Image 1 (cartoon, rainbow, N blue to C red):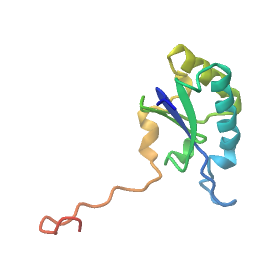
Image 2: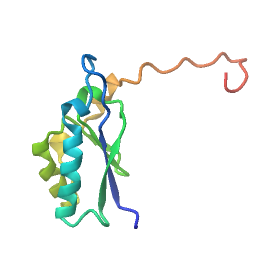
Image 3: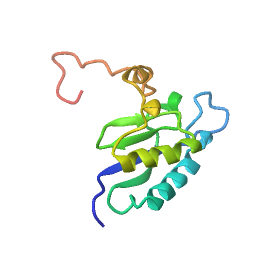
Image 4: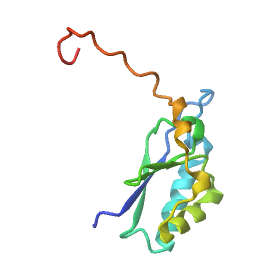
Length: 127
């Protein structure tokens, strides 16, 4: 099987009901993934151009469902099932759906938490 030019990682992370943050799966990501796979196949993109894969949490929960497009390095956010044909068509045309691309400022709310503090200057490596 050849390496594809692009991989679309659809977050399908599921949190328990009642967790305020919610999750992409609770917002329909599993169906979006299935629809995206079918749309890529219908357009003849699935064998060489692109592959839709599932992923666990991509740390952009507030914008879910999200799709990371690699190696291009951008995220689609707030994706709905209605957006999937447009995403597949844009991929076939060699472009992206700008209205769905998360801008850099959307990543300032990263759910991974604050960065870890730097170790003390005299600390051994790995401390």
